[in-house]
Structures are given as structure tokens and as C-alpha cells.
Length: 331
Image 1 (cartoon, one colour):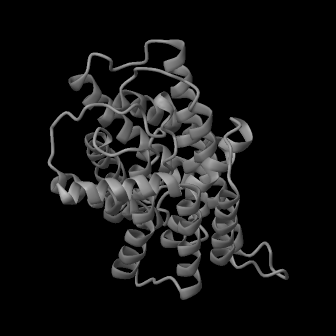
Image 2 (image 1 turned 90 degrees about the horizontal axis):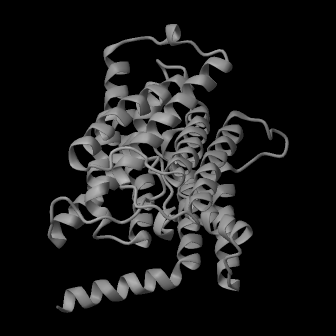
């Protein structure tokens, strides 16, 4: 995206991350670290909330309602915090279109459809392949160079997805395999969107871009829901349904993005990527605590393999991150 910082990929639907801005409120290192962990927990909890809410909502309309509400809240925040609260240029609108179409719309359409078949913790693990797919698309589309260790990283990433899916040759269309494949498409949509926005340069604030991308993506999701026969009349309104929707829109949606905006000026793209690897841990623990679900050892090994792939591809940036942390500790 703008400023060439497009490596993050997660359920959040962050519009790739946007240009790094100065924080509205300065935070010290310990508070920033706490907010970083909290953001990973909130975004990881989204997978569990989606799983709960899908029992009451058609998937595409569920996603549309979530991002209509979240987008309006973030737009309100943009309106009171910056004069640049709406897109100004053709580049701005192009970023909104790509971000809303792929990072919000397509990404969450396939994620919500996939979570009809697989638990949230499994979906979170598959989504964590996003940075690996981003590097792969950047190599093919933008001509980024990849080293032999990077190629090995791609191999570890896809091996991890295979360990999660574990397809049975005699039942390739089983619900689990279809679910994992659908969520994998969701991760690919986000990665593709991140790469396609990278060549553009714009001064549009992160919160402004995110708000308009959410609203545009929500409109696309709603239209797709109608086109596939979904109806708002099919929603089973209950306390749990309302709670899951409001949690996704307000807490892990708009509220989490306020934290995200605060951290953009402090953490670089590699550190932002690492939030994506807190999400499966958060989703797994919350699925166990609230739904009584726990992933098996092979699925956990798949997550480790995906992270190993990411570490190989981003080894230099991770090395700089570790060195920076050591220097900070010495100071």
C-alpha cells in the first residue's frame, strides 16, 4: 500500500497496513507492548465470535453488518481526528476500491463461508499463512527477489496448511477440507490485495482509508449475500446473536483499530506481522475456554510450520527486530 508497507495479513481486515502515522497519544514501551498483545487477543477472538455468530446469521450478511457498523464508527473517529476524513484523489479511491474489494470484501466472504465448516482456531492458523502468500504474490507480480531460504519458507508455509487440512484422497470434498480450502482463498485474497496496493503512494490517513474500505467492502458483501440467496429475514435475533455482532463490530472491530492506529507509529511492518501469529494462539485458548474445543497436535504442528515459513522469508527483518530489542534492553 502507501509507503510500501503491505506485509500484514490477518482476520482484522486491516487495509494492509496504511501509511505509518504519528500516534495521537504517545505511549511508553511497556504500554505499547501490552497494547500489542491486547490487539492480538482481540483479533484472535474474532474467529471465535464469528463461529458463534454463524449459528444465527447468513455468513455474507453477517460480515456485511459487522463492517457497516465498524466502518461508521471508524469514519466518525476519522471525522473528529483529521481534516482528511474522506478520499481526495483518484489514487485514494483506487486504494479504497482495492482494499474494500479484496482486503475486506473477498477476504471476509471466504473467511465467513469457510468458518461454516472449520472451527475458528483452525481458520486462524490458515489465515496466518497470509504473510507467506504476500511474499509469494510480490515475487510473481512485482518481481521481488526470493532467496533459496525464502523458497524453503514457502514450502514450510504450505506444508503447514497441509498438516491442518490433512486431506483424505478418498474424501477430498469433505467438510473439513472444503473449509480449510475456502479459508486459504480468504488468506490469498488479503495477500493479493496487499500486493496490489503496494505501488500506490498516498497521504490518506490510515483511519480514513480503513473506514471507507470497510464501508465499501460491507456493500460488496451485502450485494454478494443477496446474489447468493441470503436474506436478512433469515437472521435469528437473540442475545447471543446481537452480542457476537456488536463484539465483532465495536470491540474487535472499531475498538481494536483504535489500538492499531496507536501502534502504527511505533511498530514497523515486521512487528505488525507478528500480531498475526498471536491470533491463532488467542483463538485456540478462547475456543477451549468458551466452546470446549481444542486443536490436536498435528494442527498445532501445522501452525509451527507456517510460522517457520514466515521466519525464513522475513529472517533479515526479524534479525533486525531482535537486535533492536536487545539494544533497547541494554539502554
